[in-house]
Length: 237
Image (cartoon, rainbow, N blue to C red; front, side, top):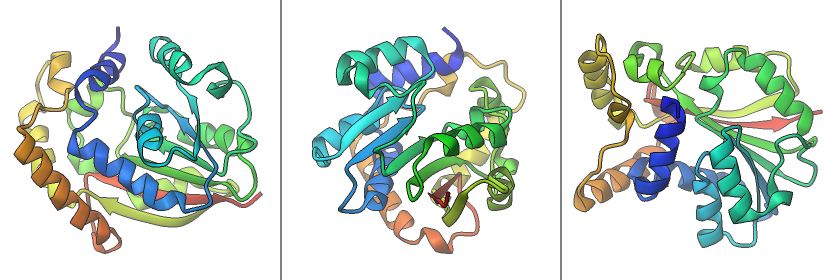
C-alpha cells in the first residue's frame, strides 16, 4: 500500500469528524445550492462526501470516481456499481467535486481537459488544492503532490478550457503557522507514513478549530493567503 492509499484508508477509520474535513464538506454544501440533484465526487477517497450528503442532503444523488482499487471497491459496495463513473461521462450531474486531487496530477491541464470533456455545459466544478508554494514540505512529497497552487497557477492550469472561474479564494489562513512548523520540522526528514496522518485531537480542540474555521471561511474572499485554495468553476461549453 503506497503512502497516499494508506493515508486515505486511515482517514476512513479515524478522520470523519476531523475539523478540516467537516469544513471542506460544509463549503461544498454551501456551493451546491437548493436545486442540485446529483454530484460526481472525483477522487472520492473513503467517500466522506457521500456520507455527508446522505446525512445532510439525502435528496442529492451521489456518484464517484476513485482510482485506488481498494477504495473503489468499498464505494461500489456502499453506493452500487451504477454510481461508479470511472470510465463514463457525467451526464445528469449538475456538480462535480475535486477535493485535494488536482495536486496529484503530473499534468494538471490534461487532467482538467479530460474532466471538462465529461461534464455537461452549465455544470459546476468545485475544487480544493493545497496552496502557497512556500509551504511545500516533505509531507507534500510523501503524499505524491506535484505542486501547491496560487490563484495564478490555477488560472494557468485552466487555460483555454471551457471552465470559467467564478470564485477562487484562499482558505484556512489560520493554519499557516502549523504549515510553517511542518515545513521546518519535516524539511529533511525521511518520513514514516504515519507522519502524514491527521492528528487525533481532543474533542474540545477539534470543535474549537471547527468554529474558528467557519468564521474564516465566511471571510475567505478577503484572505491574501491560506493553506488551501478553493475554486468554483462553471462549464461554458
